[in-house]
Image (cartoon, rainbow, N blue to C red):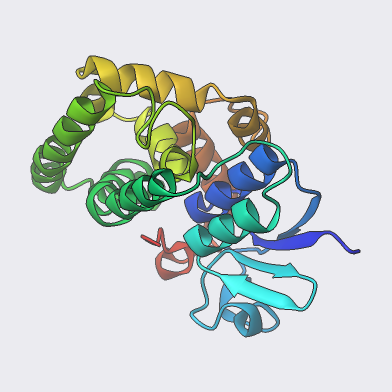
Length: 243
């Protein structure tokens, strides 16, 4: 059987989310690069895989999928017998779903906004909106207060095992570690320990190794790699999406 094909870009936090899942599950796959600088995500053949013109998209046999969290969920269940067990049964599964929703609806909107303001905008020569950053840090801080309370009770968000609920946070957390907003993570001891644990996983290290010159400083990696694409890259083409 042909390996799963992941169509995306290592510049995309959403693609990174799926890559982390594939590495955790030890699933054979082929990464098909989508050149964001050339606008390939807005053109055929990619637009047939993701009608919204975003990355990533995945093809596994006859199945075509888009939306990073849906793809990672599919991989975790379709290949449940392989690699890291990222799910659970019964009430444990329900708890994972709760924290996956928290990541998507509570954590990601603010985290993505901070990454956009502090990582991506400077690359395009756009000024960081300091007032918006300060306001968003307050919002994310309140979310992380809930995380701090939760993580005082268990090592990971859904219990004592690493699951998709934790994995889905990895791209934006890694990006935040290269910004002044890192203080929001460092100032909460249980959150800080959780961040160290999940970013230190070998599977995530393999994702970061796709940016070999920059190691774990993803902010530097994004900036340097996007700078290579400029001036061909248009602001609307990168689309640091919140999906």
